[in-house]
Length: 247
Image (tube, rainbow, N blue to C red; front, side, top):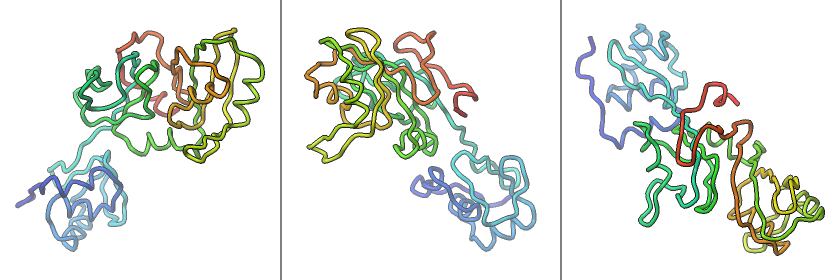
């Protein structure tokens, strides 16, 4: 049995939110000197994800299951949630004026989740939430070029020149940036499908604004290969399947 084991204050728990060497993690979360931690590892007193851990250089993260003797030091579980965001709900954790997407969730750990790619107040559709920072970064980093598909309803009729305009990218003077090329497919005179590979501020509305064509409806269908479940009504959510997480 381990004697004198204790958890330190919340200020010491920054280790839970990032990758760290195993010996440092144990030292920070128990107060045990790292020299003694290394002896514990050598004696086979530490298990990571059910396996004996002896390497002090082993890297762990916030979802590694870590035990010292029979004491669990960390047993966090990764959460991945799909929400059908309705219009009029803000993509935020706290808001004084509007209902937030967190308010809609039923998950017990919802307060630990963060939003993966926000949607505007008047935009509906697929919203992903997770407590896994590396997973969300992979999805949202423009370098990975994960496409986000939107259905857009316009006030004025569409013409074929929209397609080339989106494909060339557009210069936004305020930020002094040129958007990445975007894909536009015309469905009918007033409806288009747009695929973005980044997420600039009000990007779709601003791009259609170059054609002086106001967006009157915007709905996100998918992020990468994760598609909004048609069985989810606005405001409803569910946990992602293992296959969806891998996608």
